[in-house]
Length: 68
Image 1: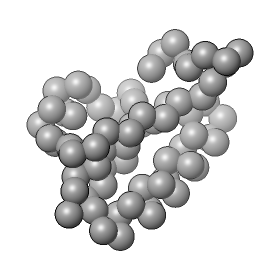
Image 2: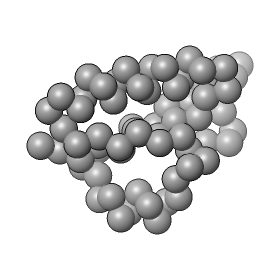
Image 3: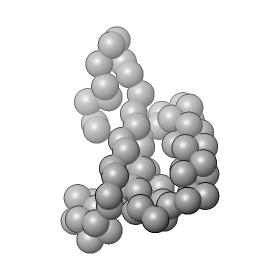
Image 4: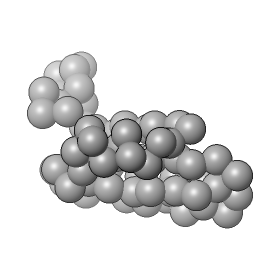
C-alpha cells in the first residue's frame, strides 16, 4: 500500500471533481490524502511522507495557474 498525496487548485470546480475521482479510484488500494492547495503547507506534505505527490491545477492560456 502506497501513500499518495493529491493537492489541487480549482476555480470553477473541474479540477476538484477530477481530483476527487482520482482519489476515489486510487484509495481502493492505497492510502490517499486529498487537499486543496490553500489547505496544506509544504511542511504538512513532508510530514505525510507520500510515495507519490500529484498536483492538479487549471491551465490559463496554455500555462499552469501562477498560484500553484
